[in-house]
Image 1 (spheres, helix red, strand yellow):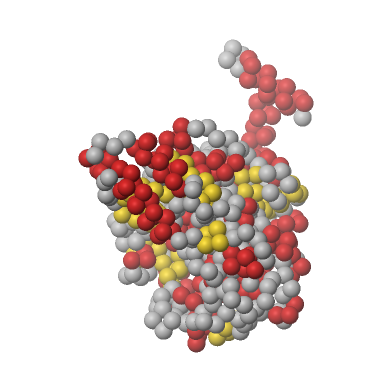
Image 2 (cartoon, helix red, strand yellow; image 1 turned 180 degrees about the vertical axis):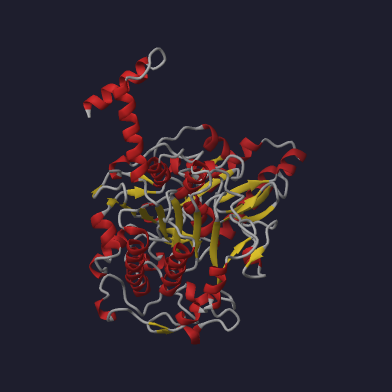
Length: 554
């Protein structure tokens, strides 16, 4: 190893004035062949929507040996992996994982946000210029156009002269589209309602491939409209709270097992209920397996990329809360689907021919109304009240109306027209709004756009806010609630904050080029993309972090 370092150093030092020695040339070519020959044929990125890190340990004894445990014990486990920005939502999470950037750079600043140029709320994957495929519903009017940077899949496509494929799959459109990137061959998401099909848009192609049409025609989704009961006896689910409680929303007023899904389904949108059960994850696994088979992923010399997002965990968490029997059963069943998927990869692609990582797009909070019963500080926020108070304050102080154009996503947008018409100084007003906001009982932090744009925060909550602040698209003031305070219903869990319950998520690497091991060193979600790029030898995504998780690489 010392000889290699010396020889490379010698070449770099004198390369401008001398020819490389034959020994160095042979060594370089040998290393290049080794990198090329050991590249994975397929990279699989798995995102488990709303998966807290502690679910790996909390349900560990209920998992089999072939799913989560296989990845934890035979791969590399980053045990202190966090999101490094606010807000921790699904759209920004998926974008950040695959671009290696934060909302500050990739511009997906929420699932929805107020667009100050279009003067309306916009959705992170919406695109009215495309056509839906597989449905006539507007659910197909989607593309990645609002994401401004590349993914590692995009860079792999460029590197392989577009011979390596990239395909994204999820129940959610944003969970399929944003990970797959701009140059993807395809992205597929599930449209429930009264159709129960996987759909796409004309952004990718003019018609659905035949295998997708065949999958939809098979009506496999109907097989999942069945009873949902616990996989194991419910009295063995000691890692979660009581089944009957007041902290869960449930289906049509029912919030305890068993659930007759066909009877509980909305008659007009019968297939939507599947998403809110573990069977939605099973459906995604079914579809992903068919995608690998029919698209011949991992079958040639050019690395392919498959992104898979399991979203049912998020629907279940929102509905029942992180301490529910339903969440526990969902993860036990997801473990079975992971084992099935990994066994398929072994058979179809071959052990040693694929690299896989598993992470989450965010965590989730314990239901605050439950925490309150345990004397843990928690509470609920009326976001409309905050907006009304800010409007009253600015009208009284500046004697003008309409100054507050929008309050959403924990951001305040001022009207540029009202500012200009009344010759008002924006920075003075935003400073005043910050001073008022910080007096509200529920508010923990507040900063204006000038501070978030000009300051150089290097740690703490302020850095998280700054990394989530996009100068072009974010509001004029940003604020955050106190720990365990949410603007949400009093049943079910949610997410979005910069606290550990939302930022701390699993990160497991497994397969080709990955060591066996674990670390408690703190890592950040934006290191995933450059690590995969380093493994493949491609350029990093154009806005990504340059921090590679070298501990995991073999």
